[in-house]
Image (cartoon, rainbow, N blue to C red; front, side):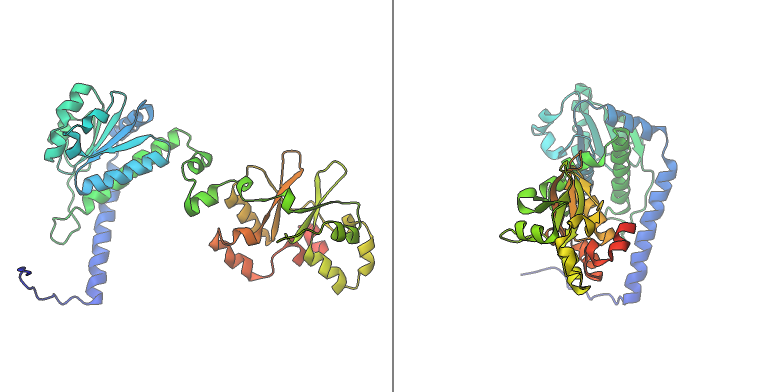
Length: 359
């Protein structure tokens, strides 16, 4: 049986709710601005320790600060700085053995007096591990033991009771992001590095290479540019789901143009059946938009959306076709391009030949 006293709900109108929410966010944002303005050489020293760390950055915190620390640890790891999280309560029961002298400790504690934190400080001192402290006061136990202190200063929690960690944890998170991203910039961490550590999910698909998503030549229609349209459509037919385009190559096997099913339909619409028995290079789109092997899917999809094309040839360093990215294969992977795809029929061929050649 629940013995908690029954409390009458406080009258709290939608207007009151929005007013309090705005006050909370404004209070936290003001504290962040104050901290940003107070950053000094201590921040640069902390970044230098992170940058020069030969082992791992070990992030440590208790309670809400520990949860924030886990997020900071994840941000460090995903932006080029090897990192792990150490729970201080587990540390005093053997997990301190995970810490190596080549590591750097990043410890979060608003008060700087958290018992679980202060108990591990002597061991870290004996090990000679540099300690970076994010805390309210340099004079706290944590602050005095740390190699570098990033002082948050006095903060009023945004909680109406002034008790729940809110402003303080927001400040820790923002400062942790700053440490991670400044260090990442110093490491010259590039998009290719980010893609390597994010192979899954929507982000991974966007940063993956076209090499993993293209239709290989075995599944594409490829023909010589000097053949007639009629010959090509007879010879280039293939079973299964096909692309809506034929890639044309010159005598050296290099991509010279593209011809789509829409182009074929347009010949009939304009009563140009005589062109069927002429070389396809006379009606193909010369020098079509392409991407190189190794290009990122996000760049390939952006090119397709911007140019409103349905098929994007992929070529090697010599300009020879190696495959094709088809819009029907990527719309499901990138829902955000569906809007572009539905604005009008896609495909270079949906414009006049003169317009396409001018583009």
